[in-house]
Amino acid sequence: MLEENQTYTVNGDGSLSIKGEDGKTVKYVKESDLVAVKVQVKDKEGEVSSLQASLATATAKYDTSHQDVLKERAAREQFEKDAKDAVVFKDKVTELETELAGLKTSSGEMATKLTEQLRNQLKTTFKIADDKLEGKALPDLENMASVLQLAGFVPGAANYDGAGGNGGGPSNLEGKNPLALAEMGYAKDNK
Image (cartoon, rainbow, N blue to C red):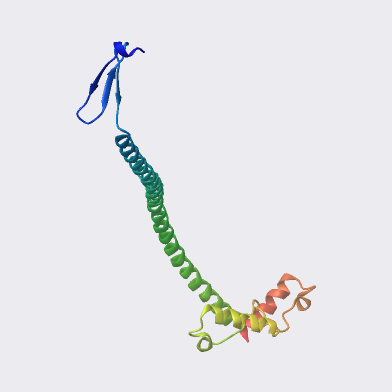
């Protein structure tokens, strides 16, 4: 560059502006001003670094909070699903409770019938008096029957011929014709 083609201007702040041949203006400043600008730039760089660190911290907090929100949403969705399932289970429990009540009723009826049958069996088979069986529950009656059987008590023989099971066996009747058998039957009735 030639100095004669260049034009320069002294600015009010002490800087110098030179216009080159290409028409561009270059500004030259005092070194003290340049140092001040450099200090300000360093301060701004420090602020930028501080802001970037704050931004990173805020981003981390945001990410953590976002994850917490996603977890809460998932938990809420699971809760809503479980609540729908709970309604189904509640209906099933109600149905099962009704069925159980019916089974308890029929079980009670069957236990009452079984108790009466066992009481009647003990009265007729083992000739136990009513007053000894009165007020006994099913387990008590079952124990009595079990003890009687284990002790070897034999039920009384059935009395179909009216002779009380004595002397009316088949050996007495063998070889007799029907007329003789009928006479024996009438003779016993007239006694």
